[in-house]
Length: 570
Image 1: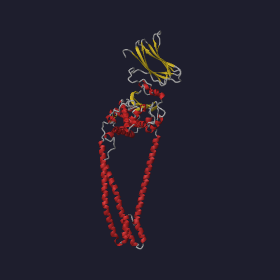
Image 2 (image 1 turned 180 degrees about the vertical axis):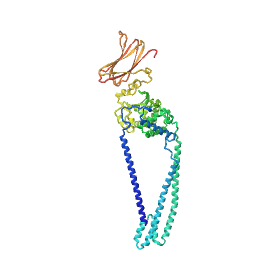
Image 3 (image 1 turned 120 degrees about the vertical axis):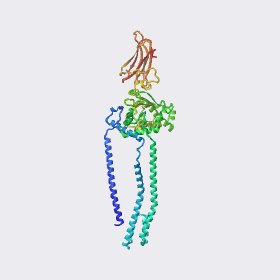
Image 4 (image 1 turned 135 degrees about the vertical axis):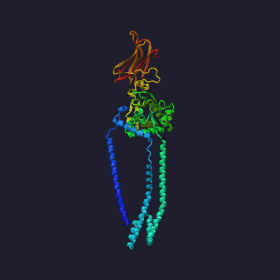
């Protein structure tokens, strides 16, 4: 059998093997693709957990109130978290065993030795081809052309060509020359092989060293079993009642997908460590931004309320000071995180407790979209809060919204999850008080937003707020009794949207006494805020408040409260 036939047979075998491998690979890829397509179809057929809704309702944190699938997801997440903390793999992947390291070393050695083996095989084939050439010459010495063709087919490398030329010139010494060439070739290969082996060993050594360094770096980052988030222990086996509350927030933020919730939790912990969030409460950011955002009052579910006022950035001096440099913009974000941390300190992170805040965003006189630094900062803060403070905001209520805000909201939309969007409430200036009253009691709404809450108010404490509805084309009176002959009456009243006639009178109990006008009849416009007044009486009687809605075609809601102050209570 000639060398040419052997080579052809090897090529055929290789082609068969390669072809079968290709077919197998194509089949595998096809199966994987079909499997992935099937999964996508199944996922698309499943309804989404969270859909856009104008009314968002917080779920219960009690384990008994969860659905079975939610209970299982919570249990699975607790198991993963327990294992990650105990085995110290929360911030890194599990360490590879020494066996795997040895296997890697072997793989590297095999890869480095492959080219050497291939070269030796090629040289062996060359030698075989030379012998075949000699045999052919003896059988057909006169046929020079055939000899040249056989030579051409047998040549594999440039080195073989040189051998063929030497053989042609001295046929008697062909065998000896061939042997010498093979020996010389082997001798030449030896130093190369040694170099290859040294390089292989060097590469393996470097990889092993790199793995050792990486392992040492990983070992330096130890997870404490007492690790906490917002003051709540995260290790499930500690049995802290707030652990489930925290984990449920991450699960709900990721539609109860355990792996995604676990990754979100790890990223949050890593982010807090990198940004040193635990120390942000002790940082001093000055008083410049004090009026830009602040905590004030409670909503109807006793949640702390945070007001964000964007009009302060209309001051060019403050704007430049806040957004003029990269450091100042970074300080703005940290100041916002500090405010969030302060709000969380007011929460009770346990089942049945107050576990979220209410955010109010006042866009009255807010700088427009041309102030790009402001809106980039808003986007960055919104995304950071969404990703690292999941489910800690019950709603985001936007008030005094200008028309251009809808354009800015479309810019923010791609960065927000559907669940976050479902918590957005947007209202125009005419409906501010009415919207806020859905979530906050009147006594907790600041007076500038149509409520009764005033700074350092000593007149009222826990007095009940009452409501009267005035139908279109009618009027209503509110009577405040003055039973004491000596005392002072104080009252607050607000009409939502106003646009009514309003007056105040004191009517004595004695029918023969004169009625005293406290506030003469006047038209009050829609932009008017709450009215506070007082009257010191010297006889018993009553205060009568009259709201006339004759000229309006809409019903009016009237909110009021009062208090009687005597000398002993003053």
